[in-house]
Image (cartoon, rainbow, N blue to C red; front, top):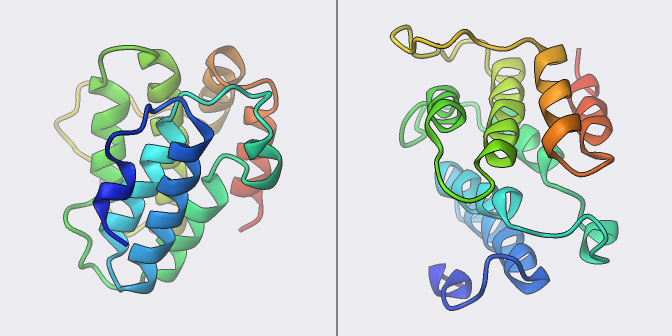
Length: 158
């Protein structure tokens, strides 16, 4: 399996979503945690309708991302995922930017919880949101159950 499983597919199809999740899992198994996060994030940012049946079997991958952050204990990510999601949340442009920014903040919070040793970007001019701020963003821009799904994942751990 390689990155070509994600090329040539529209980013709003269940096949793209599933292939991004599957590719992320493959990368994790190969020892590429950073690349796995990137692939799974592509699934998270995919334009999938909340009514699509794929989400019944494969919910939005907040739990998978948290699991990777918790179980990859070395610091050999290709960059700091906390800073990466902080920058995505403050700089994403293009279609559905509000939703993708909300999801970036939600993932940033998962990184902060799982890896409090990773520092944020001290030069980013925007304040870091609270969990309540993120919940409100997900309620406003996300799927109708997305804030609840994210809260369940972030509460799974102390």
